[in-house]
Length: 294
Image (cartoon, rainbow, N blue to C red):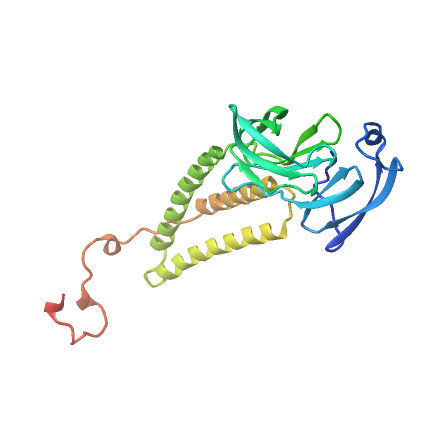
């Protein structure tokens, strides 16, 4: 199997030239081509995964493949079995576990095409074609996308399980420590920041300073959106390192500023929890208000 997961296209469609050597296929009587070497063109589309399959007629059949992982963490499997008309009219590809058939896919000799995608619980399975065991203890891992390919041309049946999309290599529970740390940092940073903006602002600018604090959060989110959309880095890890470096730089700036900052003490009249004396405030009295409406 040959795979190129990233092919740059100059536009929506690109033509790729190739040279295929069918010498080994002809020696095993899998193909009946008149020439062992063939030059041709493969047409690929932008943002589309294409799979090309060798049949007795050569490298002519292809289909659009799926590379997206399952949303619930299961394995995704499809089958593609070539059945010679002289061998059988139909066959069933079975996935057995503990002696029981968990899933199956049907194929015919009249139509050669891949089966529909089906989800399997991550585990080890024995793969059968009708009653013939093809593979034993094939492990389908969480998040992986697989294609079971095979050919029933001669007396023996050849099969191979291809990994289209690599399975998950890290368990989702490893996200839990990150979320806990981020939540703790957000609680300590956001609450103290709002409290600082409120207590250090003059009486007439407390709401304005708190709005300014929230505005800086909005600008920070905008920076994240711009960096993510521009796609400066090939790997998400490098993007996370950039954010960590920016936060480290900001921490250094805040530390230097705090050394020279003169803290404003909260006046006693603002820190008291007593009721505000309305008679000391300017304003108009609502004559329509009555005591019994309290």
